[in-house]
Length: 352
Image (cartoon, rainbow, N blue to C red; front, side):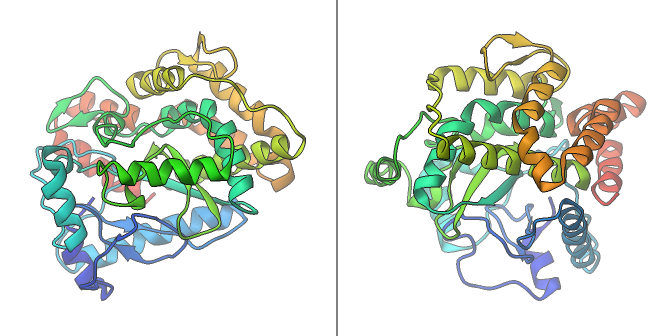
C-alpha cells in the first residue's frame, strides 16, 4: 500500500487514461494504479522458473519503493491497513463510477490481493480447470492470510481482506460451469443484471482472464514476504496443471456445493494456519498442516515435473516455522503493543 498516484507520477508511469478499465491483472512488470490512492499494483512478466519469479517479485517491490522514496512514502505488502485510514478513490472515470454505484462497499475496499495467472490452451481447458480447482483454493487463502487488522482493530481473522472483498456481488467461490459456453453465458448474464459494470467486475475466486490465455486465481491476500508469494504461485501452477491433466484423462468434475466452498473459505479466512481447515477431499475439519500436505500431495506430480517440488517443501517449512503474514503482524504487536511498529516491521519484511 502507498499513495499510488503520487508514486506513479514519480516513477514516470502514470497515465491519465482509465487505469484498470478491465480490472484484469496480467503479465507486465509495470506499476499500476488501483481503486484507491493508497494502493499500488506490481506485476511480473511471464516466466516458468520459480527462482526467476521470486526475483521479479522483489524487483517489483523495489521499483515501487524507489518511486515512493521520491515522495517520502513507504511501500508495504499488507492486505489491509493496521492503522486507521480513510481511503481516497483514484480519480479515473471507471473507479469514480464504481464508487458512485457501490457506495460504502467501494469506499472501504482498501484491500490488496495476490492474483496468479497460469497459461491454458483455450477457454475449454480453462473452464475444465476452474471446475476442478475450487475445493483446493481455501488452503491457498490460509497460507496467504495477511490481514488481521482493520482500522486499528484486531479483526479476529487471518484474512479480513477476504471478508471485505466478498461484499462485491460476484466475489467468492463459484459452482462448476461445465463448459466454456456456460461460463461465458454466466458472465454475460451477470453483466445484464446491472449489478456489475462490466466483465472486469467478475470477481470469482478463479476466473478466465479476459485479456490473456490464462486462468487467473484471485483468492489470496497479498503475501507479506516475496518468497511466500512465489510459493503461492507454485502451488497455483501445480493446481492448474493437475486439473488440466485430470480433464484430459476424462476424470469427472468434483460434485461440490458452492455452500461448502464458501464455508471452507470462511474457515481459512478466520483462522489461517492456526486452527483446523476444511479438507478439500472430505469437507471435514482437519489440522491445517494435514490439509496443506493434502494440497501438496494433490499437485506433487505437476510440481515435480516443473522442478518445484523440493523448493516448495523448503518454502513451506519456513512458513510453518515463522507463520504467515497475519501471524507475523500479531507477533509484532504482542512485542510492542504498537500498530505503527507493526507497519514498520512489515515494511522491512516486504523487501526482505
